[in-house]
Image (cartoon, rainbow, N blue to C red; front, side, top):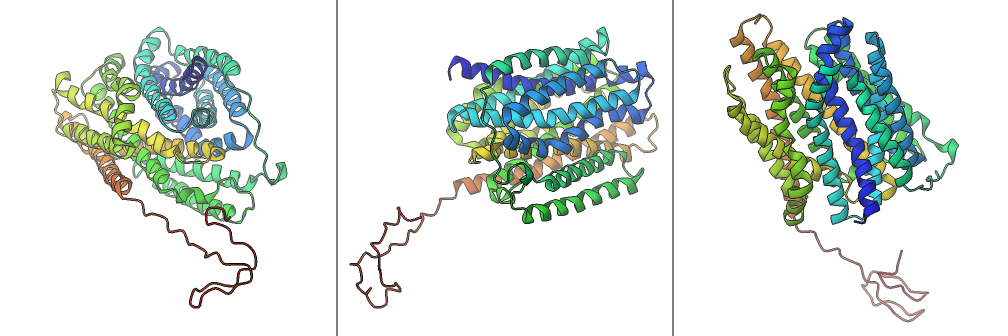
Length: 499
């Protein structure tokens, strides 16, 4: 790649780094924000959940908007929105202000991130160049989250508002560079024109994703208010059905349902949901174990988890070589195997485990992420037409966001149920943490089975296409008896010329 191509990749990767560091810094700062503003438990939880709801609820629509309205336009506009509302969050004096700011920031990320991914997949030629760019993109995402934990701890010591102001500085620099580096692209013309935009499909899609995401986030409450949780999930399912019905009848659908016939893409999206969900669920349980049970500070916890950021080194260096030699499917399988080993090794965690005892799991979890996430990104976008790359990116990021929401909500629910009545008994609480750890183990085991299926499909020899041959006979002559043909009245076309 030339200098300009590397510079463009740096800007686009900077976006996913920004998204990762933003989430991680806030996660570390929440206890301080809660204490300073006097937030209740529910409001503090919604500062985090509001972002997830906005991101998961609009990622599918955001990805398609990049295809239909222009990738450069969507990227620049929503990066600006991200910048503005991150800054507004830093000036918040009430809990509801933070919740609104985080929700809108999540919506901005839902449009901005798929646009960045589709800019990569359409700017770099399919093959080694695109694969390398995508692996660097994936590694940068992991680096943003890992470094964000440490940076968030440091900035919180200076003042929690810097957790919101720091992303503004980074987003501003990216915006200036993006205006210069991202080439102006023609906006795709819809066959139906502006009036042909599938507005009903957009409304039902956004509604379905929002309600489903809300229901998943509420799973962390366990049986408390289960009626609302079930109601949200049921309403989301009904809207999914309505969305499918709308798209089937639309002459110019927002989402071409035929894209779901691409089995490798669907497997990659499901694999990303399971892998990322397990990863974030495990990290959440680990953070609770270190801070609530062991009494570690947020900064100590962040520094301890930095070793999981080894994926940021492996993804752009080792993983491309492994993909080139063994293929995506086998490398993804290796990532799931490493994840299973990592999480199973942590199941017998004790009250007095040293950091040295935890280190193999932390390293192996980082290696697993470095092996699996980038190749899953490649598989989710490989072979997709250029005009649907935004949609493919939106589907991938929707899977990632729902996976993280499911993973965190599930471990929280299991821990809450298992620790009910435990009180201050350290042994009972440790047993509850161990119970919650089974959630990421089960998720990666299901993902492992899916990855094994993917390897088998990749290794299955492709059947040679049988091309029917039309016999060529003189014009007006009869075909031989029993040929099943008809009289040829025009010169026959060769099979490779026929349409």
